[in-house]
View 1 (cartoon, helix red, strand yellow):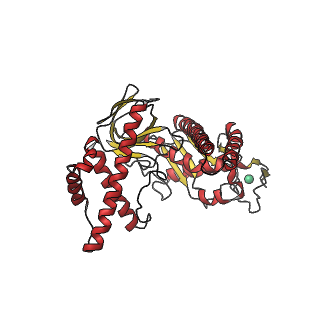
View 2 (cartoon, rainbow, N blue to C red):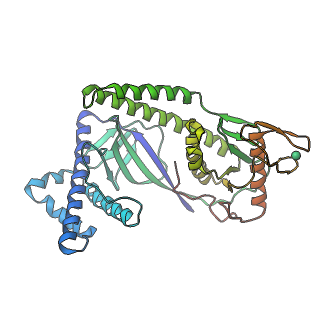
View 3 (cartoon, rainbow, N blue to C red):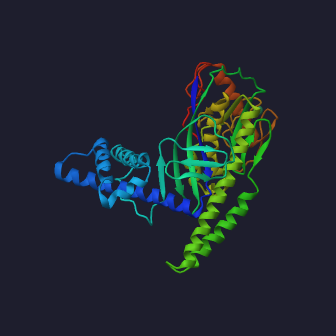
Length: 390
Ligand SMILES: [Zn+2]
């Protein structure tokens, strides 16, 4: 058996009272975080030693018995302990140079959020939280497997979301032997999201252009409002809403497209593009660029999920410049050359030719056994790493 991690996010629909409770939980989390951070700092200053999680957890219990902080008892104790663990993690990240020194949380600056490590259940369009009860949510899908932890947060537009991580055990059935028919090469394009070795194109969705206009308008609208005015607050909420909607549409589109590829093919081959370098270039404004990294993550975990293979080809492989018919590499090919004719007489569509080369290279690597650029080395090994979901 192999275990796969899957994340789910649902929009919640709390009543006014439930929302008050959620905000209280988030407030308690912020309070515990700030209190613990302060305790750690003072302790370090006076003793030159750091205060550990266990000591803090014991102090927290003590804190709850004091009259002025007794209100903490109305909160879920595991959610409060989770705040201590989150702070511990923030310190680890700081010491390992992954993040800056942990800061005090402010009600104004930081999003309302908290985490419950266990006991959160999503069922029949409701989420159960300890000490709050059942809250309605928009359950667009059922949850497979066992959920481990749940994060609750409110976004800038004031909407509440719950994110759950589920662990699913799947049987370890063997990978199918790849053939040219079941292997597809995918060239990540700029004009199109992707071009397939079958000649098909996956164009940028029509909504991408329109979204850019709506976003620009919302931005302009915000900048015209007076500082700290009520109208400005509303304009900011509106902008956040636009962002959220755009992100949802894009995610849905990429989910659909990656799902189609994984359903249809046994092996999906892509190039290891340097996404960051691409995003810095002039062409970065198009939807496609931002989508590449996300698309790859989706392909990775969907392939993992369905026991298919995602092959990532080395970025220095000359996918565009090589003739897929005769193998000749042409050195002088400009990015603007959409079509080119090889000395062997074949005329190529640049992107389709690249996709076919990527397909050929994947088949060559798979036939060769266990090369480095491959994420699978035979039937007993998992084809992709879990935990990289988008
Ligand atoms: Zn040729």
